[in-house]
Image 1: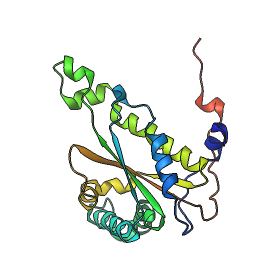
Image 2: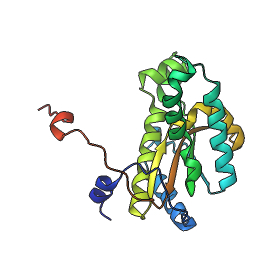
Image 3: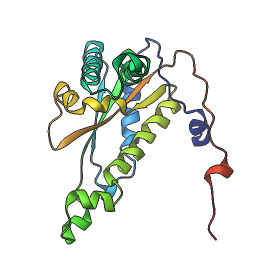
Image 4: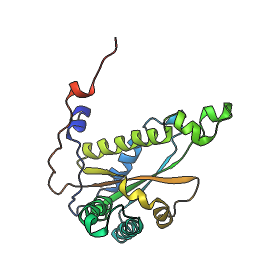
Length: 206
């Protein structure tokens, strides 16, 4: 598949068939992801592919529990429908054949080696470089999944239970859990949401 086709075909898929993702395909997806750009070429990532359905269910339950513990802005009854929607978007991955957990070791900036500025201040000055690296690698995974005939969805919602999920997945420092990507054969295709036109998002300074 050409890159243009993969980009135009990519859509967030949240409903999957029971067909498993081939291990060779998972390895190829991660191989390509590892070619992504990263701050200082640190390649700070490791990937955990999870196909164990009992474990995925436990992970989803962990996220649901954490959401139930968060303080509500309004009364529970008034928020019930909205909270159910948030919970579904954060836990549907338990029905995916495979979830890739992206973990990263956050890097020391070159600025940190030269200037007497705190890590937090440098992160702001550099505009969150580790998360920019994460965005690049996630996009590589999403496009590679499409190219190999799968559907995928990037999930950040489960990170409300980041610490708890790190315990479940036995992720230890200096690695940190950053995001999930659910992958599988699509069960139908959702409608593509409207995207802004080129004129709305593009400007040229000559």
